[in-house]
Image (tube, rainbow, N blue to C red; front, side, top):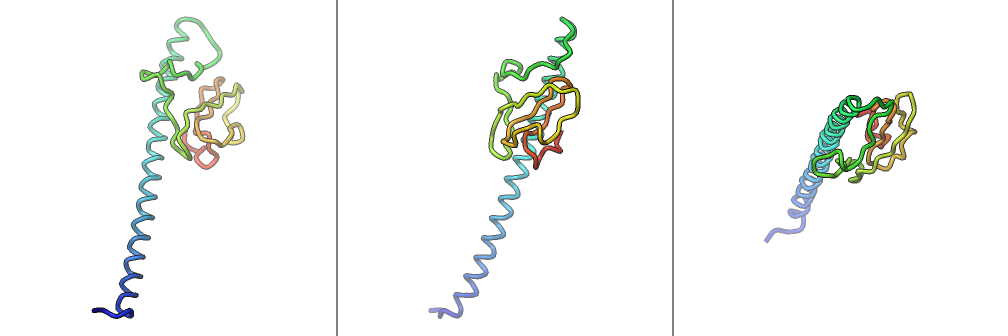
Length: 129
């Protein structure tokens, strides 16, 4: 039977391995959420571009279309999974580029109907467009 002095180094080694695996798993989860956010953002942009083009053919409108569930085939606005899943859209109407302060920093999306610009409503991830 092994004595205590032999078990302590093994325990420390196992603890270090578990800590490294947990850190790697958290990074993996974050990368997956970031990729999902980027894909959902691209989906929203494509849908808005198609709807804007359709609107222009019917009647001229200075505004981009409102983001509603009816625009999407599954009748759901794609969510922003970072920091927590949300498909809430903060809409503004200003003839200038969006700023991080325009949003509420609570997840979801921030959308400027004057310019068609849409970004994540998160100051940390605002750079993604």
